[in-house]
Length: 128
Length: 194
Image (tube, rainbow over all chains, first blue to last red):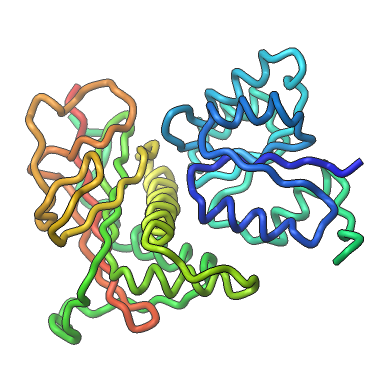
C-alpha cells in the first residue's frame, strides 16, 4: 500500500517544496496549513508520517502534537518536526511528546529524505 | 534587570543567520555591504518587509528583514526551477518572505541562545511600505520601527505581533546584497521588565 505523508506547515512555499521533493517516490502527500487543519486531515487520511512545523497560526505544532498523542487512532503516528525553532526547551518538549526526528529549517533535501526513509519506505514511483 | 549584555555581537549573529539561510535555501550567495557604501544603488520600486517577534525570559525583540519584491520572485523561481511550476504570484512572494524571515529569525534566536539569551519566535508578518491595504498587525512607516505603549513591556504573554518598546538596549542594522538586490536586516532587543 502506498505510504501517506501529511505535511503541516503554514508556508505554501514549504508545502510546495515537500510535495515536489516526494514526487519521484511512490507515496501520497497531503497538506494542511495549521495544526487544526492538520488534526482534521490526519483523522481523515490516517497518514503513515506527519512532517510538522512548530510556529503556525490558529494552532501551533506542539499543540497539534499533544492532541495527536491523545487520539486513540493517531497517537502512534510518527512525526518529524521541521521548524525554524532550535531552542533546547522546544526540542526537549517535542522529544517528550515522542517525535521521531527533528530538522531545523532551512533543511537540506537529502537530510529530510534520509530521515523519512528511516520511517516509511521511499520506493521509486512506478510511472516515473 | 536584564539577563543579557548590550555587547551582544548582534551584527555577527544576524550576518551568520542571513548568510546561512540564503546559502542553504534557496542557495544564493549573499555579500555584506560596507557601512561606508551608502548610496551604491537606487532603492528598488516595491519592497517587502517581514517582521518576526522574539520573546525570551530576559528579553523581547524583533527581527526585521527588508528586500525588494523582485528578490523574492527571483528566489522563488530558483526554488521552482526543478519543476514546471507556473510563474510566482504576489501572494507566493509574501509567503516566501514570511518563511525567509522565520528561518532567519530562527537562526538569530539560535545565536542568541548560544550567547545565553534563549528566546522563542512569534508569527512572522509581511508588510509593504508603499500605499495600499496592509495586513493585520502592520503599520505604515517602517523606519524607524514604531514604538509600543509602555504597558506592553514585561507582559508574560507568548510572542505577539506587538512592536517592542521605543528604546531598545541593543540594535543591529546591517545591509547586504544578493543577486544584485539590496537586503536590510535589523534586530532589536530590549530587556524584559520583571
